Amino acid sequence: MGQGNTVTVRYFAGARAAVGVDTETRDAGSLDELVGQIVDAHGERLERVLTACSFLVDGTSTRDRTLVLSPGAVVDVLPPFAGG
Image (cartoon, rainbow, N blue to C red; front, top):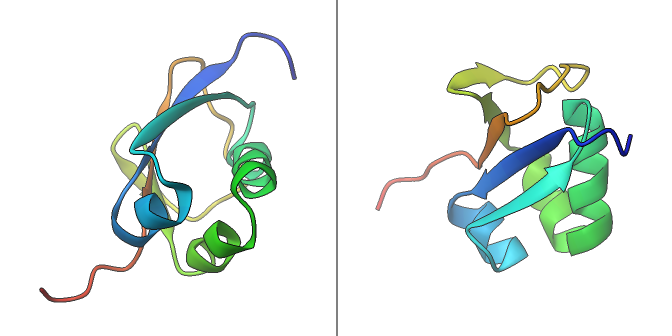
């Protein structure tokens, strides 16, 4: 922590609605640490959305929250997409 491991988080659909922003930057070493930070920052509404979300880390889909994030990584938060 605090080692300048800045990652960009991009929110889509319901996650964007829960957070109120399209993107933000965080300092996190793993996907689990990042998820903890954004839940702490944005609260229960985002936490509910995240239970159904998948994540893209630098374009690769993952649900492995132990995944180590490299500095400069881009994490997309993707709720399940519904028609419409």
